[in-house]
Image (cartoon, rainbow, N blue to C red; front, top):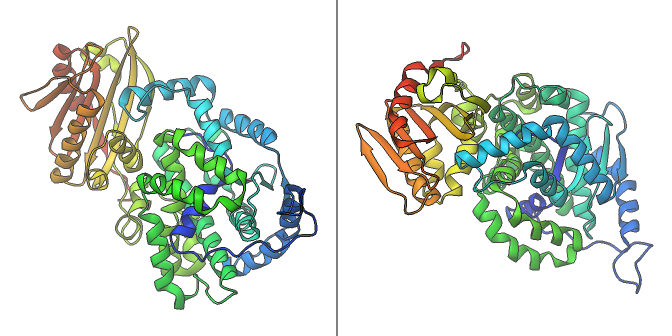
Length: 485
């Protein structure tokens, strides 16, 4: 998901953090203003009280984070209507309608989206339905959008967003994401990796804040003496895949019914969000905290700062921080695909879009189609590139990936070919001269070739043309090693 809205905090994240080991939030204390009938405090009262506590939360957060605020952060409440306007404007800055249409077309053709969708509308709905609060690095303000009916939950929202304000004041969030307009020189995979650092750090400090407050100051997850508890909590979060998050949602809706209608609506809307949109968002929170914590353990907050000075290049690095990010960093190879004019039957084709999927989006693809052992099949990634072309009104895609070993490539190729049985059920498959060809319902085919540590895919050509184009793709694709490797 290439669009990069301002830093958000998702309601489902807060619930997942509770499930992963944070202490049960205490009941909200009585407030002077109440809604009709003398029940829970009114929405306005809850918001006013939360905004008044921002200074107190800021002080506690700065102490936990070991980083002072350079200046006070403005905090305000924003209506859902105004938030939707902001989200629409922000998304279209980074993902203009024409590019969104091209991306939606490409993702649906390659199977990364299970079906064609209005990508802009789906992304807008996802963020509006799930975001509880956000920090905007352009206006330098923190906004509360949704209002849970528990004080600790509201203050936890504040702690997450105030971490983003600290990041922005010290590390420049807009620059970290490549500058205004999303800096097109950064691939989708690199942007996803950087999101892991930004949201992962905010999740780490938020969880530490929530735990410390809920235990009356008895537990500080950032204290070395709490390392075992911290690792257990963060690893539990990191191992939650989308199936686990989704399966626990219904139970959470009953368990947290007292949190008010906002969280109920957010969790009910989650099932409608395509995994291509939802999984990178959720993983940046639930899995992103672990690489940040590993940096903290190795070098304190100075170690975390180095993640901003020398950001990760790929989601592989942040998904496997111990092996791929720290020590000798595993830099991905750059795949350079030939133009359509050099691919025989694709000559004359016009490129719709091209990008890097990375290990995270490969997991999304394989999960879409019920492949077993998704994480193992996507592990060992060492670089990829996909491209989609319009060839006389027909959509044709190429996807080339390279792997750490031939065994890793074999595992992915096997998983990819098995995914085609779910994408195109009942369609025949043939294997000839090492090329696996799976028919598509539209009369075209998907051709897959395993060659050493590389996997080549042509998706959307007629069967009789696929083998020739694959041969040209193998011959003309280039792999470039990172000079830092």
